[in-house]
Length: 310
Ligand SMILES: [Zn+2]
Image (cartoon, rainbow, N blue to C red; front, side, top):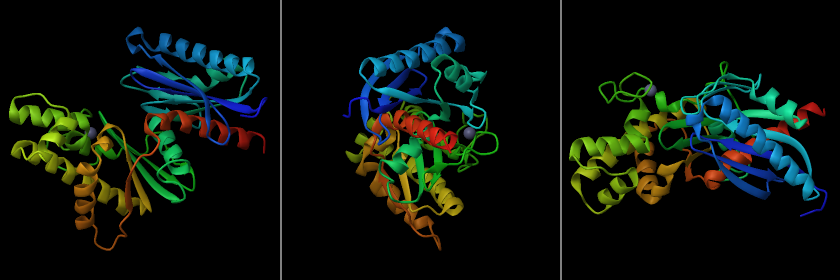
C-alpha cells in the first residue's frame, strides 16, 4: 500500500446489510466493514446511516494517511443513475431519494449512485469472471433474478433506470405467480426462493434451493424434478438473453451459483440445446462473491471522477 494513496469510499446497500470499503483505483480493497441496514426503521433512517457510514469511511481513510477522492453507492430497486436518484426499492423503501446529492453535500466528494446488480456486473466484467470478455451478461440469482449487460466495461441502465430485469421474462405462461403480479416470470420459476417454494408446495416439507440441489443429486425424484424444471426455465431465460445481447460470457452470481456443477453442468447443456444459430457463450460462476457490489460502486465512482476531470 502506498502511503498517501488515493481511495474511493464504496457502499453496497442491501435489504439486510451494507458492505462498505475503501478501494484503491486498481480495485484493491484496503479496508472493509459491514453494517446493518435495519430497513424496518424506514428510508430516512437508512439514508442517515448511509451518510454517517460514508463520512466515517472518508475519515478513516484520512486518519490512515489516504486521500478519499470519490464516493460510490450501490442500492437495489429502480435507480436513475443519470440523476443520482434512488427511485424505488421494495426492500429498503426508497421513494425518489436524491442520494447522490445528499452524499456529495455531506462528504464534499464527487459521488456516483448505481444499481446493485449493474455495478456487480461491472465489477465481474472488469475485475472478475468476465474479465477480458468485452461483452458480458451478469445474472444474479438469489431471492430474485436480475441481470446486467456490460459492454467494454460499462453497463447500460435503460431509459428509466430499469434495464436488466431478466427475472421478469415470461417463460411459463401457466406457471406460478411472480412478485410483480404476473404468472410465469423466470423469477417465479428459478430464483432460489422460487425453487424452495416449489419444493415445499409439492413435498409438504421445507427446503432451501441448496438442499433441493443436494437431494436431487442424491437421487430424490421430487427434488430432481423441481431442480430440472428450474434449470430448464433458466436456460430459456438465458437463451433469450443471448438472442438479445450475443455476449461472449454469461457470469452467474448470487446464492444459486453456489450449487456449482450441480447447476452449471445441466444449465450449460440445456442452454446449448436451445441455441440454433446463436454462438454459445461461456457460462461461468461469479468470482468476486458478495464483494462485487462494493467493488462495482467503487468502479462507478472512479468512472465518474474520470469524466468530471476531463
Ligand atoms: Zn415478474
